[in-house]
Length: 460
Image (cartoon, rainbow, N blue to C red; front, side, top):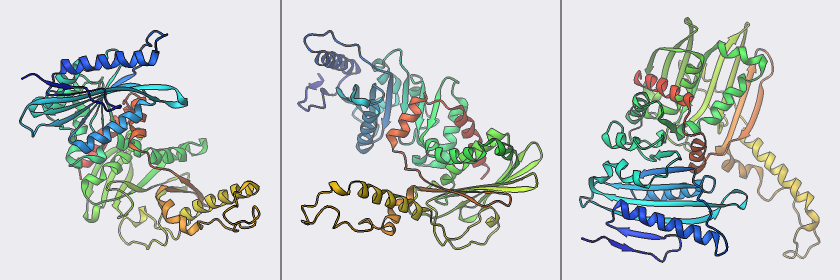
C-alpha cells in the first residue's frame, strides 16, 4: 500500500506523513531545510549555512509526555540550535507503521538573535520501536554530538536501550521520575558501570541537588575552615516520603561526600518510618555516622531533601552546618536515637525575613515613583491616597514564599550562630536539561557518586 503523504496548512508544521518510511522522513527534512534557508536569505542573498550544535533524541511513552518534550526541546533550541527528534514508542499497537511530522521554523534567541529548531516527531507503532538506532541513525547530523533524553523510565537491561545507546554520545535521565525508583536507580548504576567510557551520563536529579552541594562547599571554602572537612563526624539528612526509592537524593548527597573524602562504607541499615543509619570509615579508622529520616512535608515531592546537617570536632572545638529548605516554625521536638544528629531548634523567622525584604523594596519603589503614580481612579493628588504599608501585607505573603526559602545556620566553637537566608527558586525542566547538555552530559563527580549511592542503597 502506498504511504499517505500530506502537507498541512498549520504554520508551525511543514510536513506530515502517515505510514511512511524513514527515507521519506529524511527527504521531507531536507526539503524543509532548503525552504527555511531560502526564506531566511531572501531573494538578494545566498542561503546562509545551517547552524546546528547537537542532535537531541527524546523517547516518550504517550501524547502528554510528547507535548512536554516538544515544549522543552523548543525552549532549549533558543539557546542551542539543534535537530530534535521526538520518538513516541507505542509497542502495544500491533499494526507496525510510522507516522511522522517535520518542521523547521525560525525563532528569537537570546539578545534577539535568530535561532532555528528542526523538529521531527516519529510515532512508532509495533515492534519497530525496539530498534531505535535503525530508525534515528539516518536522520542524525554528522559532526555534532547526539544526546538521548529519556524523560520517563528507560528499559534498563534490555536490548532496546542497548541498541539506542549505540548511536548516542550520552544518556540523560531523571531518576526522580522513575516508576520503580529503587530498582531503576540500581539499573542506572549498573549501566554506568558496564557502558563504554565514552558514554556520557547525566541525571536531572543531580541538578536539583546543586543548591545543597553549593551550600556545603561554601561552608568549607574559606581557608580557615578547609581543615574542618577532614573532621566531619556526623551527617543528617531529612527527606520526603518513607519508601526506599525516596532515599535516592539523600544517598547521592552522602555519596558526594564519601567519594570526595575517601570514606569507606562499613554497614548500613534501614528502620521503621524511613529512618536509615550508616557508618563510614574515614582515614582508615575515624568513624563517620550518617542518618536519614523521613519528614512529611506537603509542599515537597516524594524524595526531595528538606534538611542537611553536618557536624564535627576539630582542635577541641565543635562545628556544625545546618541547611533547611522551607524551615518550619514552632516545630515540636522529636525523641529518638537520631535526635542528636537532628537538633530541632525553635521558632524561625526565615520566611518572614524574605517577605520583609520584599516589603521594604516595595515601599522604596513606591516612594521613588510617588510623583508619577496615576491617580485618575481616585481624583486625589499624587501620593495623597498611598497607604503607609504595601497593599499585600508581609504575613499574607509568607505562605507563598516559604517553598523557595533556604536557611543556613553555622556554629563554630563558642561563637555566635551565623545565619543566612536566601531564596533558591526551583529550576524548570528546560533549564536543568540545558545545563547538563551545555556541559556535554559528562560529570565524573556524578558518575562516582552514583556508584557509591547504589552501593549504599543495596545495603538498606
